[in-house]
Length: 395
Image (tube, rainbow, N blue to C red; front, top):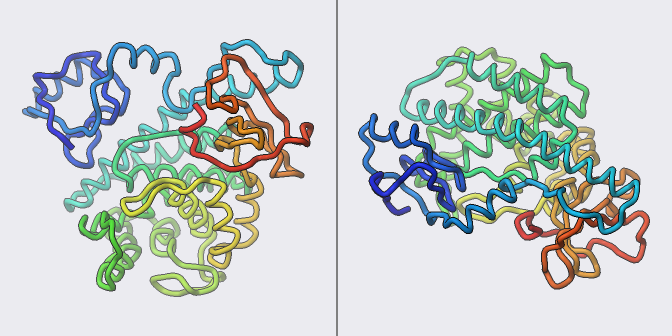
């Protein structure tokens, strides 16, 4: 990342990528305006430069960004291609998603900020109080339980920042989502969220040259990484005084129901229920987001891997429920249809998971549509999904 002097910043400026105070502390997110208060804070703390890989957003780019309201916003102020009852219902789904996204973004940002602050402090030997985490756990549990749009919000969401911190937030949301599918009570969902937020805290003790290594890991590297569940459990029980029923998720989250996991190689009947839930969410969230050593995997491909290669790692009932609820092409997935049009899955068909409802966003030539068009593959049997594509390609 390059340095930018704060003398070159002004209120209202935006950048195409996040601004950082150091290599993993986000100051202002991508395409977010810098406020005068932000600039005053930099001066107050004696900070003379910030870091970024992005470019300053021009006025034209800023106008375009304002019109789309950022990643995952769905423009519904367009004429219908076919004005009928179904199109009206699908438009209503997108409008509900736009409304829900405002609160979701706020909860996710607060989650990220707290995880970033706490994990960074823990890496320096300083520890926070559980109270702040319980508050965010309650917000995540309540927002997820009352919001049917959670899958599409998670899959269309984009958040800059150090991958460990963003991963913990995504994994927590997916974990609580699965807990909701399992009909957990509100107190149990809050406990699940709290345990999930702390599950990877042991990673703060892994050296960066190992955790961010882009090449193959050595045997010593693997041993170092595999210590983090035990280290995390010790931090939670000895330093943060988290109750054992929640701290144990950190200890067990890399176990497998067939006994092939680590650090204890225990079997299904010894793995706690909350851990079994988090294991599935943790794996799925990790696969669909990038890592220092690989690109993100499409949700469709991630689900195939979990069904085939990794099925013996998870509780079969839970993983089936998770995948069935999301469907093979989860709501929020980008797809290419057999006639080469592109779009996003907005509603799944329970009995035919390969034939969902698509909001078409680009024509066969890749041009953005200027109208609202929907395709129900259960009705249009001449069409099918040709391939899954990244969400970023459909808009």
